Amino acid sequence: MQAGDVTDQQPTITVQRSTPLQEAFATMDDNDMRSVTVVDEDGKPLGFVKRREARGATGRCEEMLHTFKVTGKAEENLRVVLSKLYEHNTVWMPIVDEEGRYSGEISQDYIADYLSSGRTRRRLNP
Image (cartoon, rainbow, N blue to C red; front, side, top):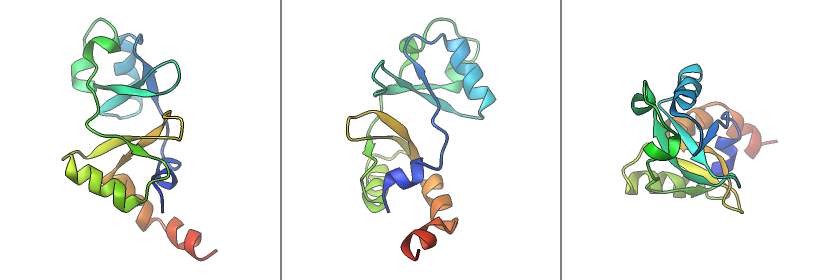
């Protein structure tokens, strides 16, 4: 099972570095997100903005951008992804495709949900 199998089940919500922080906050608020990934014009992840920092803030996302500790690849095995999460002491990270474009985020919770959903059994025993 690969990281892309898990991210395919999650909504892909991003903002641009030029997005006003108020708009980014509204996006996070509407989607019950703690942070939102910021991507460049090519869809490559640059970092993220935290909801609590964007609340009531002015300016653009690029001004409050936090860089990622680590990224994963869509084709990586879930064991590799979990190892990266533990190694870098983080609960989530972005997943990118072969061209380095953002394809979603993955977390320990998303992986657990995916593994308990039955989709893995259907995939292994068609």
